[in-house]
Length: 187
Image (cartoon, rainbow, N blue to C red; front, top):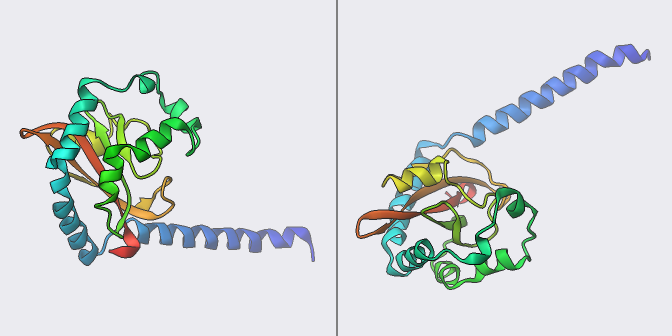
């Protein structure tokens, strides 16, 4: 067979593969009405964490005296850290992280709490970003609003999740944010 004759069939195969991937991605980015109702219900249920005294105290303490070991943290430094690094371990095993793990449900693929400046206060596992300041998942809660993203493959959990976020409130004033990644397969 002439090698140039294979080009159309290879091209056709690649186009078919691209179409299939696009179709799967499109399915992953839209919630069904039933899933959307469940996401809304979970958001409402989890929002109580935003005024939980343990959460509020930890975020308030972080805001008033950010840990010095994170003063020079940048996104590039964060990205280079291993999950076994002391910085990651301290945020995944601090008292707030341990407290929140006690409230974990099967639908939660990830959870992280950020201070007013967007930096992490606690989490279940290393997040893809050190700070989410400047992104809707943090900025909307800091204005007192909630946020719901579209389903996507989450880098840190490896699952298709839909992230929701809401403010940490101290006396009704936003002082931080909580982001929860809901495992779409469990909705």
